[in-house]
Image (cartoon, rainbow, N blue to C red):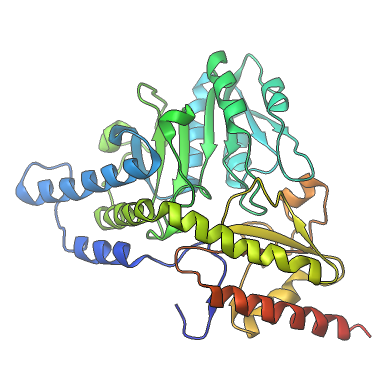
Length: 371
């Protein structure tokens, strides 16, 4: 971390955990191809399979169900492509990450299911959107902008009974809250390593045992023919170490994250023209979204940045585009003026203190400019 700075943008990407850094550096000396049977190759294979076991332990999956990818975006694209052979129709919710409708739209017709004012989809609406030619339903674990969690139990089971594939985007959940892939019953689950302290360019796709879908990347039999290309051994080793560290501190980390974000929520009533977007209770523990009545979010971000506080605003992937948030628009709230605050494994009370001290001053300064 940069000295004197307070990083509150973990939902975008988290700082690399020390355990992941150590594993990554150590594995950089691995020279073998994991697909070879000489000593160098076997050492590389050991590193990959150890990481697979570490990831599987974090997400409640069998090691053989873990497919390493470059991150959730690739995993989502692999799901949309791989399921396309089962039907010409895919279902998404209106608050999915932009990667989901973008990938699904390449492979046929897409139905978008709306949400309520908290950003939550109704399970009956999802089920009603399914057609005879539906290949897969995509539904996120929790929203990347407002944190609202979705009723997965009421969605996954009925879809499985109908024989429709269900994919859960858990990029904001893995490493933050308990995830049990087997108990969830979903067919597919995607995640990114960099969200919880793993290396950038790491992630995975969980594929239910016995399920076969066409691979997105072809040309070799790596990852049990589910994703061609030689494994990035060092990156995978770093991901495994991050998963192990996250699993060890998962319960305490969840409690700490909720306590920190609850502090932000508790401060909102004392801030004029500020409100909370999303469900303040039924949410992921590590992020909250605030809305403003009368100030532009980019100005707020710049003011906070000058005070040493890093947050995020707007759609999940960009603060530069100035485009309204599709998530907030789907919720029927102001999609142009928002601030996302997200904490993580290295966040302290001092970081939240800095935000709560700076935000009122920034808002007051911006409003004074209009007088």
